[in-house]
Structures are given as C-alpha cells and as structure tokens.
Length: 127
Image (cartoon, rainbow, N blue to C red; front, side, top):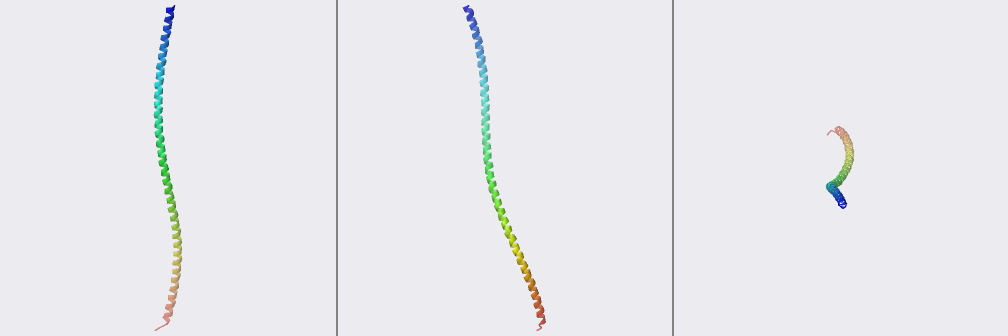
C-alpha cells in the first residue's frame, strides 16, 4: 500500500512537472513575444520622435518664412504708398503745367493780336 501510494505520488509529481515545464515554455514564449512587441513599440516611438523633431523643424522654417513674407509685404505696401503719393504729385504738376500752357497760349494769342495790330499801325506810317 505504501509502495502503491508512493507510485501514485511519483506519477502525480511527473504529471505536475510536465505541466510546470509546459507552463514555463509557454511563459518563455509569451515573454519573447512581449519583448519583441516592446522592441517594436520602442522603434515606433523613436520613429515618432524623429518625425516630431522634423515637424518642429519645418514649423520653425515656416515661421521664419512667414516673418520674411510679412516684412516683404510691408515693404511692398510702403513702396506702393510712395508710388501713389508720387502719382498724385505728378497729376497735380501736370494740372499746373496744363494751366500754365493754357495761360501761355492765351498770352501768345494776345501777343499775336497785338503784333498784328502793331503791324497794321506801322503800315500806316511811311517813312
């Protein structure tokens, strides 16, 4: 009876050892899979960090370009205002010149009339 009990105990121990061995193998496989998964996640996170750094760099470049464009737009606006002012001054000068030409034309016509009148008057005198 004792021998039979020892034999059953030995058989149960062998089965338990096999189950423990199977659990250890399954656990090792799960750990290996977990390690591989964590490694993949670590690579993804590193890739994301590089991508974020690139986006930050591009954002900085866009910001700098925007500032430059703003400065250029201000300069263009200033020059356009200057041109508009000069065009206004040119228009005023053209109007003044037109009025002066008109006055000169009137004066020339008056001088022509006076000259004609003098010529007629001189024609009456014979020396």
